[in-house]
Length: 116
Image (cartoon, rainbow, N blue to C red; front, top):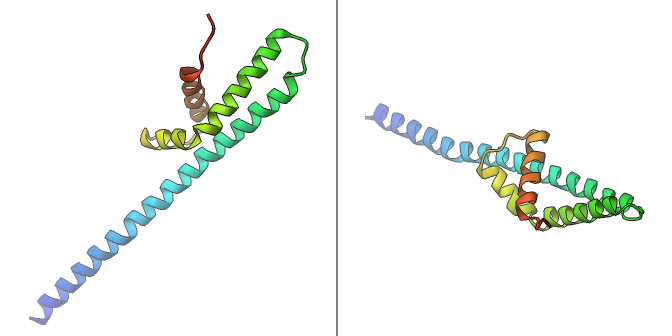
């Protein structure tokens, strides 16, 4: 009888351990990836903003238009940062810079109203 209750207690302890430890490990990995995605978006915003500062004083119409597009991109990334991170997590985007850049550029292109 004691052996049966001991085995039941051990199984219950193991089950409780796995229920508590496995989700927290997943959650911390999940948060690390989310933080990485967010840091990549922040870097992209800084890059776009620096391009705006650099090119907005140009005399070339093409470069001024490019600066305006970069300003729109920085604004888009800043306003949609949380949604973009959530989308990247949901689709299981590989945390590599080139994949993140491709994803962000494609989302921006979908939202940017082009002149034809």
